[in-house]
Amino acid sequence: MFKLRRRFVILLLLLLATFLFLSYQITGHPSINQILLKPFDFLNVLTHTVHNSFDKLRFSMDENERLNKRLSELLIERQFYSEIILENERLKAILALKGSNPAFFTAARAVARGYDRFLNTLIIDKGKNNGIVKNMPVVTVNGLAGKIHSVRDYYSEVLLLNDPNFSVAVRLQKSRHEGILSGTGRGYCLLKYIPLEETIEKDELVITSGLDGIFPPGIPVGIVSSIKREGAEFFLYLEVTPFQSSSKVEEVVILNPFITKTSKHDFKK
Image (tube, rainbow, N blue to C red; front, side, top):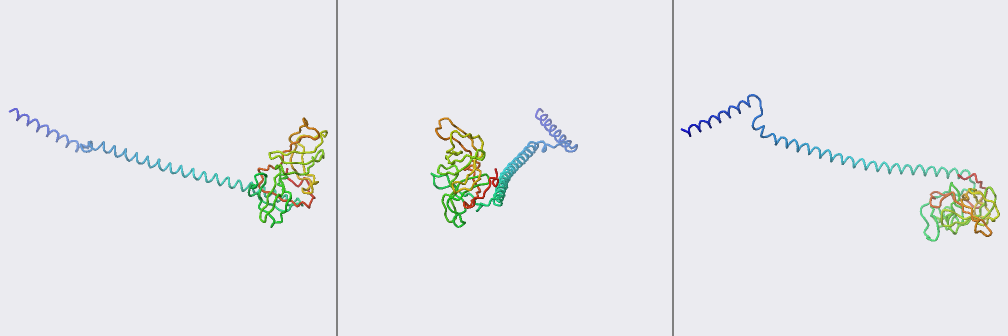
């Protein structure tokens, strides 16, 4: 009797469960399968979202790398064009110098530093085949740069203004005192043989005098930057800062030493 009741209860529960299941299907409520599949749907959506996020991140990283590369290319192009503009300005100044200076012989470009470690020299791309000879004056639009030291067929070596072996006869433009300018191997030159009793002003312009027979007169050389009398016996100690830095020579002009009709106004200060 007890077993019969238990079977009846079990059957009743099964019928009730069947009835509820059919009721959920009819009324539109989610089915048991849908309820069981909910976690899998969530995992599927989550996986899809994460995958899309990684794709977007990878795309953003690739795009960022591409933009950085393009930016670097644009910066290089900008630097390149800036250098071209500066070079054109220097060449225009040299052409203007050619038109105004009767001593102009030819223009040349610096291509390398000198090979002799005991001399401060510069290699230019003009040589014997271009008519270059030893001791020709070398200038820039700023002023005196040096002189031709040695010549080969297709290139020449310029002894720069600040080399200790370089010397040039000069004149102080205002006071008209004359002396010899020598290189020191540094950023300044020494003006020698100005008597101790002479009055020299700081920042006075130094120009070539033409008395050495090599450099035409009136080429700007530099300015007096230091005057010392202490410890000197016969001559003033005068330092001159050149207008043209020996470390920044790029384009140069070679002058004909046999033409001396040169004015200081022919050169850009």
